[in-house]
Length: 173
Image (cartoon, rainbow, N blue to C red):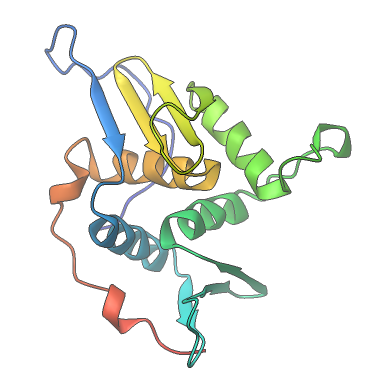
């Protein structure tokens, strides 16, 4: 499946009244597998290190290489990398790195409101993205952007999309 992550032009009519769609990571394996599929579609490579107990993933394309802890965040980073978007120095925040700051900017450009709350998480804070009848929950801003990208690509029933299993086939670096 090829997903073109471009803004949707026009209006989508779901023929629903007062229905709220909530998106969150409830099945990490399925979510991460779909993120890996989108990463591969974008011509990126993923690697692990041999004997790595922390299971760090490495994302690579041409002269770009970065490490991350989960495929959903790396999907967001690949989207940011392909955009060539850079924030002006005066917009850099000392509390977030540049990828987080750019992810926030992308989410805002997609017309989402962003909140950070501890109301839904027992072990920290959740990032919440809201847009019309959609609410997204994730543990980081990169995961939030990755989740938004999954729904844009696979639709509201993204968890039931049938794609090949990639999780067990990530080569060693």
